[in-house]
Image: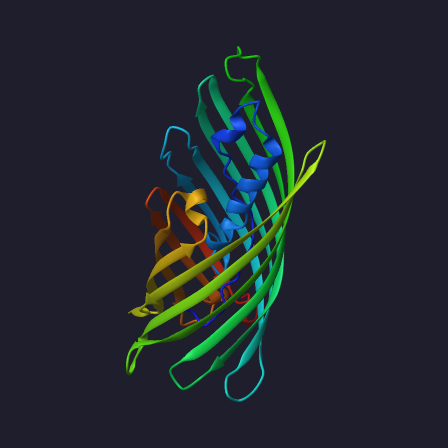
Length: 316
């Protein structure tokens, strides 16, 4: 993995359950129970440290569960500063994220449709240090604010009563998240520095407020995620060009209630990053490109990314 700290942008994925599909249900209670379950899950789907766009899908797992499709966009910025001669660095992290999702529910009297649009801003700091010539320790602390707009159209029925039409709920959610993370990066085999192994533990705490025209409902959630990555850089030379390829494989295990949102308790992620290098020192030498594919039990998606080093850009 590149020697940078992962930059998280917090957005929101919110699953609505069948209990809110009937008029006799206390909708505020349903919102409180389910809002705490899934706020912040997109944090772990926008894990690229670069400008990226992705699309994902969650399959329908039961008669009552929704089928979901959603897309993400992330625009991060990271600036690192060297502190001492021992290689320690601290970093400034900033970012913007966008999230769009559509859900469909099958209900006895028709179909319920759900639409989400979310924007998020985040800021944080990071620190990394060499523990020995091979092992590097890193840590980050981030704070993120998300604003989510949600329209939910559902048939209004009560038990034993005829269908009386559709009603649309217009929800607005504000979410504040605190995300500490720490991890290690080191060679998999002694003296084989090209094979890098990275493990990271992330704890996400989110406080959300749902607001409708009539009331507010608050909820809190926590999520623990462990990511294990390894990869091997590979360089190929072709005449006056060089191509650096870095295939990587990630295994992510998420604890808490992440499986309620993505219908999976884990996912695998395969990354392929490459960089074109010209011996003529062109400006595009500082660009790198990537593709990621994610697969869970009932969850899949893909992501394209591009990264660049503004400090080394030389347009000519």
